[in-house]
Image 1 (cartoon, rainbow, N blue to C red):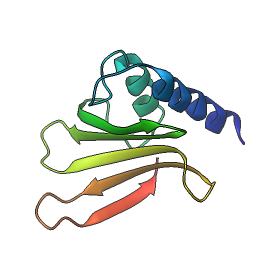
Image 2: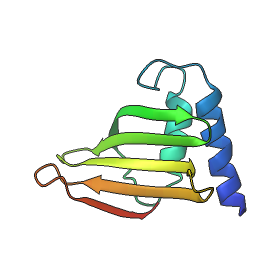
Image 3: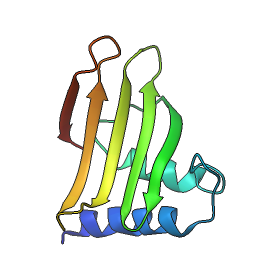
Length: 103
């Protein structure tokens, strides 16, 4: 694992191990922000909607770019296949089509 991947996994583990509310944001705002900032494909300004997955070694952050309708998802962690992932998926608000790229 690279140094960057190790740092991402440290943040993922911190988010997963922090007691939070059902949206995953309470007590986790700083950690979620740090994880978003590590991605080259997340804009400087965005609005986090929720963190529906934050357990084990997986975090999913749903957010919107300021001024845009499409939702985006940042997934970070170890997938069920045992592989490391750090990717952003944009979901078209009209068609539902998803476009994924490495974060």
